[in-house]
Image (cartoon, rainbow, N blue to C red; front, side, top):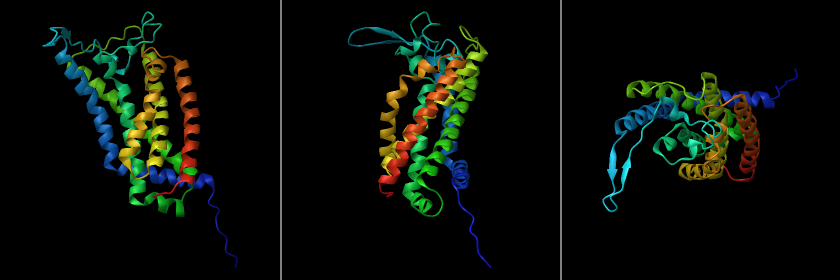
Length: 272
């Protein structure tokens, strides 16, 4: 009797890798901690800024007065209108508290999540064993990118829920001025699609640093700063289908390129 062995092809290896990674993500406390933080942050920001709105601080040396300005409405925590809609001057470029304390900060939280999630693979020896018996480098990178993207999307959606709760607690208006519900949906969808870049970059940093999670976080934050200034421009509150397509195509294209580099790094470097 002849013994036959089932071929372990690319699709089967990738499917197996995805099942393992999704199971690991949904059973690790890290995922729920990051989603919980994403939910709480907008509540704290909206409530605290509303409490401090109008407060005046005086510089003891110069006597200059600074008036604290809070959010005018809930939607400001998701960004600002595009330059054209804002009369030629995008509010996203300002250095006010409301311009900095918004959902775009969460991309750095995504980077931390991906770095810690991957670093645990190398620290525990799981990655070395995995490549020996289950998957190849390409499937590993693809799987981590998909799982990281789902984690990032969960964090962004949690931020939205938190903003709705925080806006209600702070008593801020929900009136949409200068954009519609459709624009906001396109804005949020664009931000979710754009998060793929902030998954691919930390993944590259993580495979470079291996088990050194702190180093991968530092590298990913540095990589992310190169793209951070682009976020307000491609995901404004008055986003359209064009912004969604741009984030989809741009995010996917950069993911493929960065993923190829990550795979090459894994193939050319030691796993310890």
